[in-house]
Length: 111
Length: 112
Image 1 (cartoon, chains in turn cyan, green):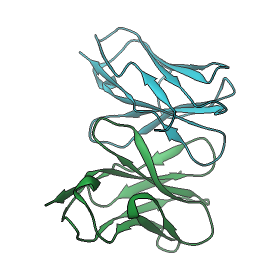
Image 2 (cartoon, chains in turn red, green):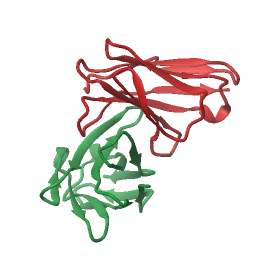
Image 3 (cartoon, rainbow over the protein chains, first blue to last red):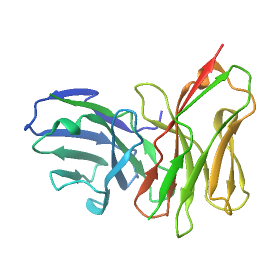
């Protein structure tokens, strides 16, 4: 158990819709990162938030956005869903040090 | 830019045999190196990490890895595997900034 939770566990959406995924970090973890893991691939970095501000972004379009809240929870929002957005979405939190603690992920299916 | 190459997509091995999962990385700066394990339908669990110091790193579940700077490698080893070690293993690099780069993964399949 890493103390990081994600909801929902599974989600099915239709192309063009919008989705919000949620992550709850451990208390004191002021940094949260989101990753996309397509089937059979390694996780790809989407972005990172530090003290409620985005401070790094991977190669993902602006329709992927996020929020981080003072209570150590965060959200990943994806607009205009595409079929290729189907993946496992992982959040990971840390205190700013080297070790990240991953949640169990949300499996998103876009039809 | 950093990159990670896991040289084997699948590694089948018999129970109680030794195993090595290979990882090479590319970076122009110093890196932190990690190995994670992912069991089916679960998130990632940290096996071990190299930050600095001794190049032989010991992790959980009897795994160890050796950092080789000249060969830019960080291979994962276990002297005797169990059925329960069947999982996906990911090598990752981090420059201490915000972005962790993962390899494509190696599926370890332990056979009875």
